[in-house]
Amino acid sequence: MNDISSAEEETPPVPQTSTPTTYLDEKIEIPRDERDDYSFSFYRLWAFTGPGFLMSIAYLDPGNIESDLQSGAIAKYRLLWILMLATIMGLLMQRLSLRLGTVTGRHLAEVCNERYPRIPRIILWVMVEIAIIGSDMQEVIGTAIAFNLLSDGKIPLYAGVLITITDTFIFLFLDKYGLRKLELFFGILITTMAVSFGYEYIVVLPEQGEVVKGLFIPYCKDCDHKAILQAVGIVGAVIMPHNMYLHSALVKSREVDRTKELAVKEANKYYFIESAIALFVSFLINVFVVAVFAEAFYDKKYIDVAKMCKHHGISQADIFNATLHGHGWNDTIEGDLYKGGVFLGCMFGVAALYVWSVGILAAGQSSTMTGTYSGQFVMEGFLNISWARWKRVLFTRSIAIAPTLAVAFFEGVDDLTGMNDFLNVLQSLQLPFALIPVLHFTSDPELMKSFVNGIKMKVVAWGLSILVIGINTYFVVSYVGQLPHNAGLYFFIALILLFYFAFVLYLAYLALGFTFLDFIPCLRRPEKNYELYEDRSTTASPFSDTEGIIQEDDCINDDEKS
Image (cartoon, rainbow, N blue to C red; front, side, top):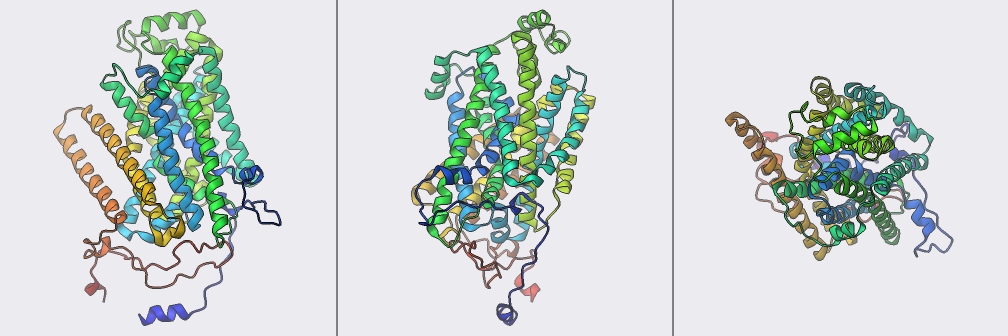
């Protein structure tokens, strides 16, 4: 205690300035008139616009696009209402995430670093990194397929995978031109996707009445087990775990005077409006894709599509050669990103194929950059390690490319696109490691003060979280049931799932405020016994806890420490 007391009496160290290296080094000022008026203003809404649209890109990554495609191909319009509900649930979770970053001035990974014991914190970091790498693999797959389709097959899939190494580094230099220009660039990519998939919607002309019916009538008449699994997969594809870590960090890019409660309240309001608009745009794009393949691809046979491919002279027509791929000519085609593009070319002309490919390329490139930022925020927050972005990209992309390159080189497009199913399962498994922490911290009155979740919000948020986790668990169990029957494999999976559910329960234990495991030092909450020396500038938040935290370094008991 004497050491702690003396530490409190020392003069706080002077913060050292460093060379700007991340998205957050530039702060956007919020326009304010002399009256300091906090009434609604479109001018101020525009100043807050940016983080929500970057966040919404995760709802448009290649994994989501393939999920949309398969939804239409398997169940026609009958799962559109689930897509809408999943997007609304996503908006609710993003609202909690942005409020945490806005109120406390710290993003989710930083708060986890402060509030969780060391060993669970490291495990949580590993889980989030797995989610980021899995998402990055989907982006690599989507980009490689887009290059292959755009080049008429001249760029093989493995070459497309390798190209994703260089193009990512090129995009890294964009933020040197300013934060607003970087956000504008991402806006252009979202617009490219909207125009590309909107073009396909206009060309195919789905039945508008069926689209509306699918959106607003919650039913799934005559849905088989495959359609139900696809419905579950939509939730896993839409709500991305690392996106909550990303959004809580992106909102720190605006100058918010956290000494004023009205300023924080205003920021929460504008960020939520912007996020709602951004997710509405992403939802429309997802609806375009579902409707296109519900109308054109549903229940299509190999023999029907092969004839049209020959008619339009599509060079990739072999993908619909049933004999070549071990199918019957009257078998129903299963959709994926590659087949979807070739199919559109066969049925509606080569222009539809190229436009689809441009949309997939935009989805892959935009998601790659937001994944890079997610990884950097997560690493800096959990581990207090600040890497240059090029090192972070090299780390994540190297891990993502190795298995993707192997499948692309030795197997082929069927196995490459099939990896997306596994990766969606992987994303589903990681979801609790974002949902539970964000619910935990936004419900903590010591941290959020007057902005803490109310009783109704807690009930709704926890209810939806349990529902989402339950849905994704069903999805994972169903996927495991399709694996080859092997006792050793099942035993290994059982051990992993046992550890997984134990850790999820431990996070819930912390979130619900239980203490009966505190006799185990490495599972005990960090003690708050002294003041951290923080920057007490006008942007420091009086609405968040400023007490320091003593972290336990390992699982030794108190007697051994003394």
